[in-house]
Every structure is written in structure tokens, then in C-alpha cells.
Amino acid sequence: MSRRRARPAGDPSSDPTRDPVRERAERGHAEARAPVLVSDDPLLVAEVQRLCAAAGVVPRVVPDAVGALRAWAAAPVVLVGDDAAASLAACSPPRRPRVHVLGRAPVGDASFRRALGVGAEGVLSLPEAETWLVEMLTDVGDAGDAPGVTVGVLGGSGGAGATVFAAALARAAATIGPTLLVDADPLGAGVDRVLGLEDSGGIRWDALHHTSGRLSSRSLREALPGGGGLSVLTWPAERTTAPQADVLREVLSAARRGFGAVVVDLPRHPDPVAEEAVVRCDHVVLVSTLTVPAVSAAARVAARLPGPTPTRHLVTRAGRGGVTPESVSRLLQVPLLCAMTSQRGLDESVDLGAGPGHPRRGPLARAAATAVRELLPDLPGSAPAPRTATRAGAVA
Image (spheres, one colour):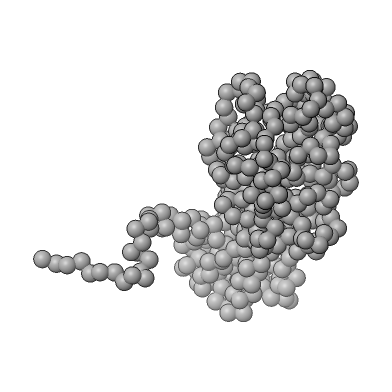
């Protein structure tokens, strides 16, 4: 009778939650998405590995033509070192897109002849082509996932509760998919304070002010504060000037590539950065209270929103006024998404750093859940529910 040999306590295979089949599938998926570098030149390999690290990808390095042919068809991009191009051309690899020959400056006519032999799109000379190569590798690392949906949240008037609703919406979306909450309002309260994350480690807007070129979604995701599927990009304790429009554009582009949902707390004051943020949104949610002055202010805000994209939606919050959500929707000509009733203890919960109330209970949570179902239907578990008017906290 044979005995099964006991595995060491530190052996990862002894973990009962380990799924070897899934691990092999994930490794295969990662290898299939990795750029392939064909080279036996240690200096060139080190240089490309450095550029790949800047792009947030890990290259698969093969030293010869045999290894290159094995990975040739599946690789998203193939970089052929000038030292390996001749031997690879002798094997007559099948023609495919996104093949580039890499050489260190200066490159001569022989490099271009070898590039023709492997069917390359061109010859890249390092270090001159570093910026282009990093941007291309960044796109490779971010490819393969459907872009996320960007939802902007905008207050119709001061004190409408747009920041709190944006935080609740992001937290609801994070329960079913990776979500980023972007604080684009330098004069606002700060979404990290609303969520109680002001002491969390990670980068803030000041670390991105001088960003140039392509921003890796993986690098952004790993650098931001947050947890539980929710990441936050907000302001440092010492507020700085708003980011330039091109920085915001690149951040939102990387966010769409790296997150299933992106929620943007938009500033009410019009400026180039605010306008850039609005046009990058798929949906804009206008939050208004039910008083005549608040609705009057919301009408002016709604009038400057572009159309038909992004799609506009209205969320109302109960107040002491006698205006109905339906009448506000007709006046603003913005479809009503949901109507919240008052929530007791909300201000106290935010003041204590507990966030905007319970994530699944209360009028605010129900309104956020309705918004997720309607605006983010492609997130797993967020299929739209039948629209039946209620006043229990939302028009669901």
C-alpha cells in the first residue's frame, strides 16, 4: 500500500482554494497578450525590457528563429532585433501585421532589406523611436478588454449632492466590476473625504500634472488609492491647480481601458478642463433638489450641456419645495432617471468617514443601484430592471 507524500506547508499546491486549470488558462492568456521580442543581443533585450516596463507590459523574449515561429501567429506584436532578422528571414515566416525590426542608431540599408525579409512594417531606430514604441506597447498591454463606460455626475446647483451621489454610484458599480471614481472638481469637497479614503496611500492629481505621452491603464490602476474594486483619483491635501485638458484626456482614456466603469464628479463652473471631461462622458447625470431656485440654476447648467452625446439624465433629491420630479424633467427636457427621498443620518455618516450611508440600503443606495442598472447594463450582474414608477427612493 503506497502512501501519498505530504506536501510542505509552504507549497502553493497545498492551498485548497487553488485552481490549477484556471491558473494555466490565466498564464496562457497573459502569454498570448505579451509582445514577443526576438533577439539574442543582451543590450537590446535590456533596452526593450526597460521600455516594456514603462508601458506596463512584460515581453516574451525568444533568442532564435525557432522560438519566434512558435509564438509568431498569436503574439499581438513582434519586435525583431536587427541581430536576429536575417536568420528569421531565412525561415520565411508567414506575413502578419504589427512586426517591427529594432536596431540601434544608426541603421543602414541592410536593416531595411532584412525587414523586408521578415515582412516587417518598418525599422525602428533606438533611442529615437523610444516614445513611439512605449505608446504602442501601452496599447498592446491595454488591449483585449471592452472599454469601460464613463458617467459624469454634475450638480444643478450648489449643495445639490452631486459629489455624494457620484460616490454612491461608484461604490454601487464597484460591487460588480472594477470602477474608478475621478474627482474633476478642484473646488469640491473631495470624493476621498466623502468615502473616508483621505488617508489611503496612492497618487493624487498632483502626480499626474506633468504626464506626457500614453498613460498605461495598468500603471494607473495599480497606483491609485482605494479598495474593494473601487479606485479613486482625487486631490492632495494641499490643493493644486486643475490639470491641463490634455492630461485629463489621457487619464480618462486610460481609465476607460482599465476599468469597467468610470464615474466623474464634474465641476459646475465652465472651463476648458470641465468641457473636456464632459465630452469624454457617455452619460451625464444632472442632480437637482426640488426647489424653485435650484431648478432655475439646473436649467442654466442643462442648457450648456452638449447633445445628443453624452446622453443626459436627471436625478432629483427631495427638499422642502413643492416641485415634482416629473415637472422638473419636463422643464429641463432631461429624462428622469430616479427620484430620491430624504435619507436620515447621511450627513453624519459622511462626517464620520463612513461614506454615503449603507452601500445597499436607503434611498441613496437604491438610486445608485437604479443608475447602475440603467447606465451600466454591460457590467456583470447589472441587467436593467423593468421601469416601474415608485417613490420608495427611486424610479426603478
